[in-house]
Length: 150
Image 1 (cartoon, rainbow, N blue to C red):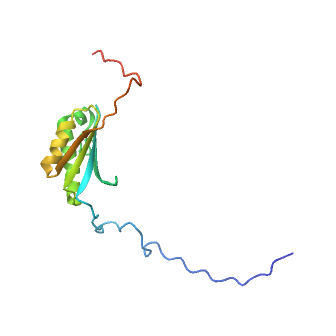
Image 2: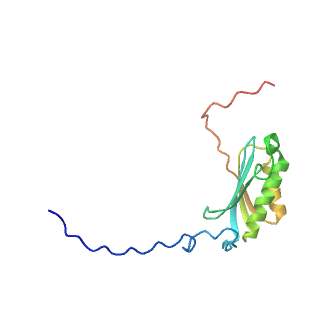
Image 3: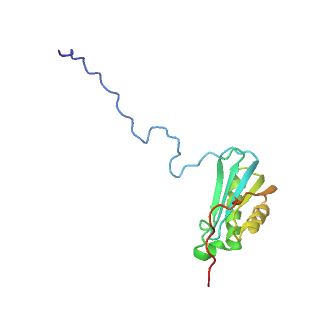
């Protein structure tokens, strides 16, 4: 049994991709400024080899981020306190341009740039409201790496 043929309805012509409104602005166009509350959290992860800093709002949405590698340092220079200072200054400046004024700092890890990163955030103009060490401490968990014999 065959179904009766229905007259074909003309399909609407597809709009060109350039004319369709999209969520991202066109390349080179100005982006609208994010509306940011004045308080946030700076997550500083200081490892032996690098320093990562992420500044979020109080809900956890990332406002800006930086690392010693993003600041232009390579190799063993990434683990220096100076690299941590430069990375934190860049990240803090970017967050202040979005409207952030006060920050709670959460530091994790044993790296050498912990204190210098906090000082850099303060020197940029962010008010440091609190500092918390959130380094995970094992209750006799995994075996640590062997000691180096140099």
